[in-house]
Image (tube, rainbow, N blue to C red):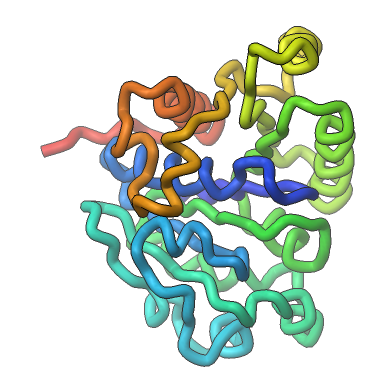
Length: 252
């Protein structure tokens, strides 16, 4: 089982859109996939037509007394399951701080799922705190969307430093998100990161198909498969598969 965390120090950078689309691409590639929505806003949960509610909330979910399987729901898509968000996830840092080894909680909870899933994608809330430490300890790859702005690139440095201070050597992959090449600054930043090995070759453009996901509740790669953003997500997923050394599946 491979765990990919879509994370960032700031919100509003296309993190949830990436998690939602990469999850369905993983499932369509034949991998048994779980999308875990750790963001209390529950946007990824909404996009998969589920209610953002977990019985017992964050305290029960992270208490370690019940298997995660009790909280997982099937989606309408083959090979894709969802562990929904809950408003109580706003206090996840507080809940984790009461545990003896807070940075090990998510890894311990995910370990039994190895029998059931090939890929777990974590849609993380923005920020750098205890829950991010636990995500880092549980992940095989940190995937970081970055909007084409100087301050956003600076936040990438902060996330990378935070990641490697807690787990040196953990694979880390950034990608440009919400790109508009009509803007001079965006084109300049594309050129700036082109030789930066931290960045994926794929860059996801701004797209109305992505913006409509919240209304249509359908991943953009399914609703508009020929859209430039959908093409970019497919390229990004191919790079992720390679980074985490995921074995190709034979669909029957």
